[in-house]
Each structure stands twice: as C-alpha cells, then as structure tokens.
Length: 308
Picture 1: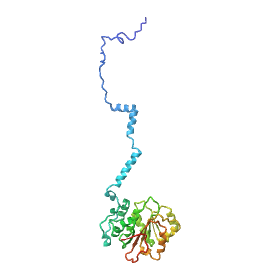
Picture 2: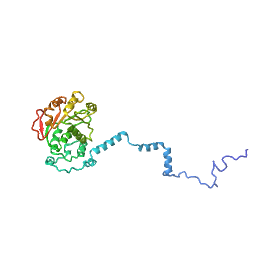
Picture 3: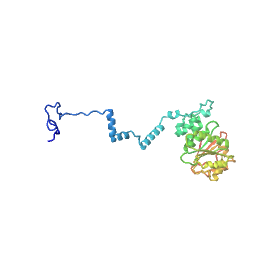
Picture 4: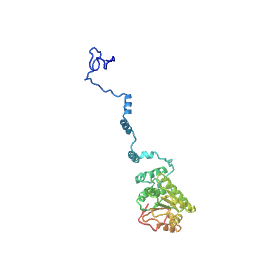
C-alpha cells in the first residue's frame, strides 16, 4: 500500500471531528440584502444595459410632433397676449405737439382697435404716429371695409391719405400675388408721397407696393411688374399704357382709389380713367377723395355712393 496520505484526510469530508474548533452553519440562518452603494449602482448600470437604455430614453428630447405642438401653443399665446405686450415693443415717434384744429380734434372718441384691423397693420399705424383716428378716418374706414363706394372730402393735413390707405392695406391678401388695389393720383410727387405712406403703414405686412408715373423708365416698371405687386400707385396715363401692353394685369383688382378726384375727372384725365376701368374686375369698389372746394359731382359710379 502507498505511503501517500489518503484524500480526504481522516476527520474531514465524510465525518465530523469532534475536537475541531469550528461550529457547523445554521441551516435556518437568514440573509438580508444590502442597499446599493454608489459604486454598486455604477457597477449595476454597467452590467444592466436594458436599464441604462431605459434611462437614456427618458432623457431624449421630445419628438417632432410634440415640438410642433409646443411651438403652436407658444404662437397662440403670443397672438392672444394682452395689448400691452405688443404695444410695449413699438418704436413710437415723438409726440406731435403742434396746434390742432377742429378738423382733427372733433372726433367721436373711437380707437383704431375698434375696426378690428390686423395687428401688423395696427403696429404700422401707431409707429407712423397716429394715436386715434381723425374725423375723416372715423367716417370713412368702416364704410370702406364693407366694400361700398365712397366720396370723401377733407382738407389737407387731416389724415385723408391714411383714410384710404388703411382699409386698402387691410383688404389685401398678401398670399395672392396679384394687383388688388390701384391708387390713382394726378402728379408724380403725390404718387411718391402716397406710396411712401402705404409702405410705412404696411411695413409689418408682407405687402409689395409699387409706384409708377410718367417721365420714368418704362423698362424698369415692366421688370418690376414681373415680380409680386399687391398695391399699385401711379398716374392714369402710365398705368393705362402698362395695362394695354398686357404687363399690368388688373382683372383681380377689387379697389380703385382716386386721390384728388376733382383733378382726375377733369377732361385731361377722364378718358384715360374710363379706359382703365374696363381692365378691372366686375366687383371693384371705388374711392374718390375730393378737395373741399370742389363743386363738381361724379357722373358715373358702379353702385350706391356713400358721402363722407
């Protein structure tokens, strides 16, 4: 028999040595689970990819649809904000301290907000320096917004230009790239002045204003008309010339304004205006602004006339 020791040694394995200092384990002993320590948490997160993936998903930004809804909510809140919010950001000119006559001060106490104008148009009105509508504006703007024919008489400096520019800008649809309003004036200087007022009042609107008069480059006007134009200001002869060439399309024009109509209905301009009207649509409305000393009456109108 080999002298090597047997395995297991005597007293171990199969039997229990009564002289051994160790005590046997209690089979009913309970173990409690330790709470995770910071090191254990990192270790578990590293070895648990599903949990790590779930944590990353909760930190992802919202989807595109959710972002669109949030953006729409912010825009709606901006639109529905109080009047003080959008008025606070306006760049108002210095207050007009000049003496004002009754032609300007004898108002009914109306406000521009009473006419339910577009906010962008109201911003241009206030930044232009208008605080409240003048008497001619109080009488004419509500009627013009209904599409009725108007004959208005007012003195210079009473706001008669803005009285027809404001409803004209309000009725224009900037998404429809056609000529929708035509303003006729007798002189080049008045055309430039009127177009500048339209641009200043509608600077927050996406409305394209064009001015065309005799004595300027016809080629430049033709090139400009190939681009979007919503409001056209000019003298009758030049606009009629462009209309006959087929460059100035007036079939979608729904509003015709004649500033200083007493001069435009004189024998010098009246034949051109009568021809120009035939190029316009059937449902157009007419605006005639007369000087206070005009004694003649219009001899043609499309429908009932509102005197202001």
